[in-house]
Image (cartoon, rainbow, N blue to C red; front, side, top):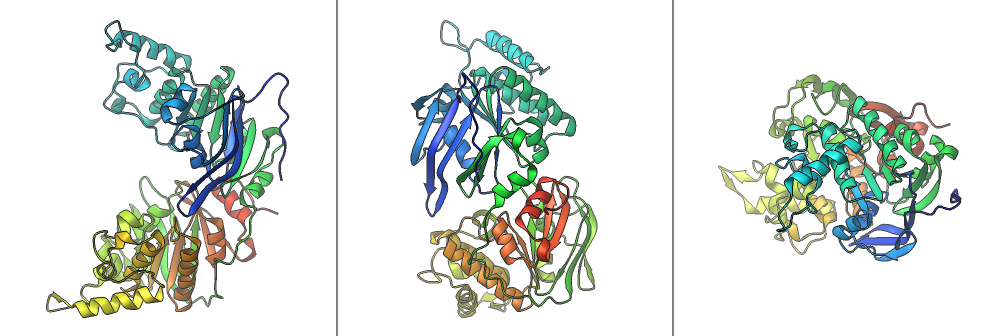
Length: 509
């Protein structure tokens, strides 16, 4: 489905991409995508997590080089071999987390790398501050150029980032989730600024998962899905339902071997779980033999809830109960003793201990079971590691092999084996198949289904809609630190998940 955009008479895109493809080992991030950015207009780039939005931004800003395809500025084909080359061509990006320097002044941040200089080649501080004051005034920012950045709030830092973009005479301004950390008032101030940039003739690429924002400020839309271009059009002709369908229009395939569930009694009950900055009033029940999916967009608070359940952080209020036992988890060791284990999203930093062999990674949380009188028994360590890695179909030369030498998928299997060896009641899997190949995904999914069939209670946090729908018995959707919706049965559809995550009221017809 694709809506063509007729170009306005006498105008052409400031920047055009055609046939852009980009691959990484085992992953094709972009495949033959296109994108047009027009002067004085906002183009919303829409897609679920993993659609290729971040990759295309890095291509536009010279961080990645495309394997195939062309980039044209004002109709002339060009290349961006470096970030500096993209900047000289007038392309700049304002990211969700602004890349600024707290110890430098506002003016120094605005002109870093291209500060005005005097006759001897030294930075002309007075001229730099005057230029900074002029740029800030042009966007309505009442900031002192001499103030150090650390003294400013998040919204003011965004204004500095925008002034920096304008300081290089940017023709294309990329805004990547710019309102994620802003208050309601600051968001509306940003909208006014976007309108001002449009009047100045800037072409703006606006990336957001918030549909109210997209319909509020965008003139055009482009949708990516699974690294591919699927459609573009005018916002005046778009509907929320149409855009959601384009975002998620795919079927669950055979890498999700979900077995029929036999749901048992409640194992975990969470009520009123809250954290001062991360999540609010979280409540749900998890049953034996159930795979409970948690879905949400970036920043929804899913991982933060799971880390609190595992004792990494402490909630400010709320209750957690396993069976009839009320828990006040103060550490991860207390969580493990209570029967809760957590496989983190970042297995490299939080899950695996690189430099140690596979068998020691597996037995690390279970040393009491593999030791006698305070001495580790190597035979028992190997036996435990062999049992659980065999069940997960680990591919490795030997259990003595350094875990750091394994593929991402096999590292994930070792991390899962490590926690299963503790014989938990509840296993939390945070993005369990992120960054691993399809074959390893299928093995992890098959084992997850096997665990649930054996009566283990499973929580799966995932940003992949096919994974959530393919493996879950029930799905909780989070948005901005709260539970937005809960779906099961026939109500578990891609459209409903995306609508709830994006804050669109009602369910798809």
